[in-house]
Every structure is written in structure tokens, then in C-alpha cells.
Length: 46
Image 1 (cartoon, rainbow, N blue to C red):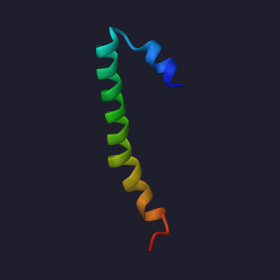
Image 2: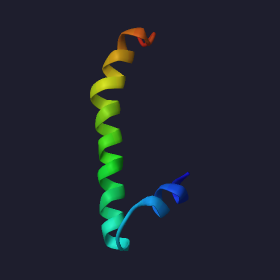
Image 3: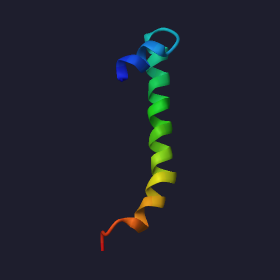
Image 4: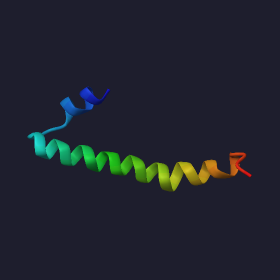
């Protein structure tokens, strides 16, 4: 999967690395602010 994403990114290697880091940050932010708050009340942690 990562190889597929890497091949589809445009530009040279440093630019690809920058885009890949931005994509990873966007996914992490979406998980942090959307998925985890929605899931927290449904987890039996207490």
C-alpha cells in the first residue's frame, strides 16, 4: 500500500517526502479530532 502511494505522489523525492508527511499529519488530525472523540464514550475504560 505504501509503495502504491509513494509511486502516485508527484515530484522529486524531497517533495514526495513532504507530501507524505503532510498526508500522515492530516490522517492523524482526522483521527484525533473526529474518530477518537466519537469513539471515546463507547469504550469501556472506566
